[in-house]
Image 1 (cartoon, one colour):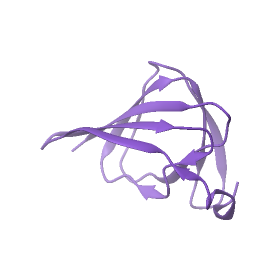
Image 2 (cartoon, rainbow, N blue to C red):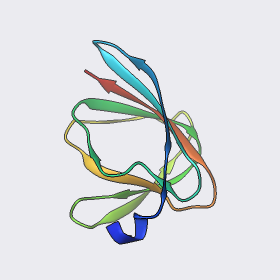
Image 3 (tube, one colour):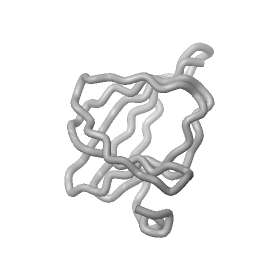
Length: 101
């Protein structure tokens, strides 16, 4: 999947839930054929899936990988990650992201 192939995808629905001096909590809802857009994480973060599904992670080097999201199975990533998260499936996917400031 290339940058050109995702250019016309809708944005994911992003809802900020908490933003204070210590954390930022954001809910991401991915309708079918939606994306976050390219972004770089400036904080360490934890992702907590809430709706099962598969999202595709596009990397700056042009590679991509499909990642299964299973409700309640959280994971941690360090700051510095740069990517675009894409739902190229026909089903919605959602997660809560907790950034550690």
